[in-house]
Image 1 (tube, rainbow, N blue to C red):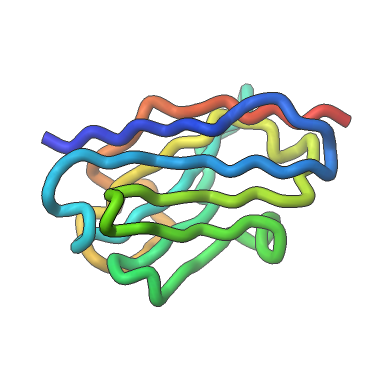
Image 2: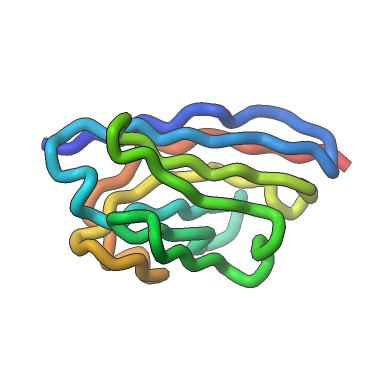
Amino acid sequence: QVQLVESGGGLVQGGGSLRLSCAASGRTFSSKAMGWFRQAPGKEREFVAAISWSGSSTTYTGSVKGRFTISRDNAKNTVYLQMNSLKPEDTAVYYCARQSSAYATTRGEDYDYWGQGTQVTVSS
């Protein structure tokens, strides 16, 4: 059984930064890609960023490119999302997810385990 636990969310002013963490249990963490998704109130869940099993490949949705950075530490079974220059439209619940393969993809259906989410609120 795999468990994903997110942390690091909170309230921040526009232009500020937050760093989300996702700690994973289980021995297969280092062989799987990981991703971050978010869901704002009244909206569908959307892809944010993903990273391959080794960390050598990353992909981002267009609205966060240049502002967010995904990274991972396989020794600590943890994936991170560094969020800079935050905007009010980044307000959402952010979810960490484990991909069923080693390669980073943008489709939610490719991910088989999900965390409980952490709230990020950006004030204007």
